[in-house]
Every structure is written in structure tokens, then in C-alpha cells.
Figure 1 (tube, chains in turn red, yellow):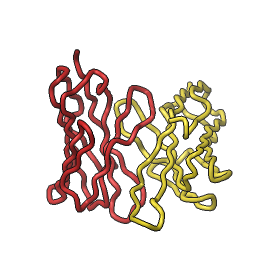
Figure 2 (figure 1 turned 135 degrees about the vertical axis):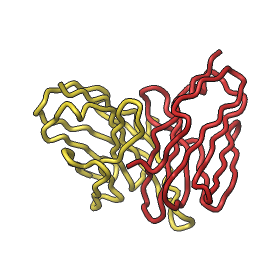
Figure 3 (figure 1 turned 120 degrees about the vertical axis):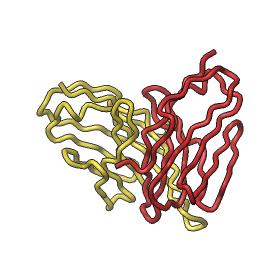
Length: 111
Length: 118
């Protein structure tokens, strides 16, 4: 069964707008990661946030983590057409030493 | 990422055939993984290996087997392919981060193999 669930499943916005995706998970985690997948390609790691961190930034990406709510959000600011992709959260449940992926949010940026 | 390669990139086969998908990496990572992805879904773990002598079943190992021939090579076999094994297959590697810190298990993915079983 999937540990993480992304919301929304699909998101379509205009270029320049901000995109927010959410991830909820079920069990305690060591860290949570976000990956990006362009259509039919391999996943690419974007950012990792540890369980003792609340917010992390990387360029136009901002990730938050609320362990009390077992949820995380990924914000992409000033979106570009090239940001069109699917975005997956992945958690490392405590002690598991392997990742469990959500089903992803399909993001479309309209020019 | 050219550091993780998969062959073949595309394969069409028939029900009952034996298929091997190969993965090679030049990242020097000990940990390797095989996932499958079905349309509109996330990745599901098939098998993983933390070193050459270590093989572990993942979430959906039935109908699959693996071989870790060397640190750099991890092969996935479908002994008798069936149509519901039609999917996109990904290999990934990771580095546990060494002795200096906790495992981050950030994974590096190959380009994928698109397998169709008729």
C-alpha cells in the first residue's frame, strides 16, 4: 500500500503563478523527499527534508513538513512551462531504509 | 542520469517468455533498487539490494527475480512474462551517506525500460 498520498492528483496553472502540492503519509518517518518526473523519464531528486526540520528552500522550491499532521507541501514559485511534470513525495518510514512513493501530482504549466 | 543506465529501453514480448532487464551504475553506490510504474501511479518497489550479497523482496516481488552480479550491476528477470507485467521499470541507486551522518537514501534513477507483454 502507498505510504504517501499527493493532493491534488492533477494541477493546471498559468505560467508565473505559484504551484502548491501536498503529501500526506501514515507512519513516522526519518525524512521526506520530493522527486520530479518528466513524462516517461526517470525520477529526479529535488529536495529532502528531515523529520526534525519544518521548512526548507532550494531555488524556487519551498518544502514544509508538519510531522504532527503527517503532511508536507511543495511550493514552486513563479512557475515556468519547463516545470510541467509529475511530482512525487517519498518517505522513509522509521527504520525501513527504503523509500515509499506516493502516486504523484501531475502539474501542467500553461504558457 | 547517465550514471545509471538501463537496457533495453523498450521491449515488446509475448506471454510466457523469459525477460531480463539490466541495470548498470557508475556512481559507486552499494544500494540498488528495481521499481515498476503503472500509468498514473507512483512507483512500487519490486526488489532491492544493499550490497552484492544482500537481496530483499519489495512490495510486489511475485513473478520477478533479481541477480546482483557486482556492485555496479543489478538485473531483473521475469521468468514467465504475463500481460499485467506491462509497465515502466526503473532501476535506482543510493548511497547511505557513510559513517558521518544518518542515511538520506536519496535515490538516483535510470531512464527506465518500457516493457509490453502481449
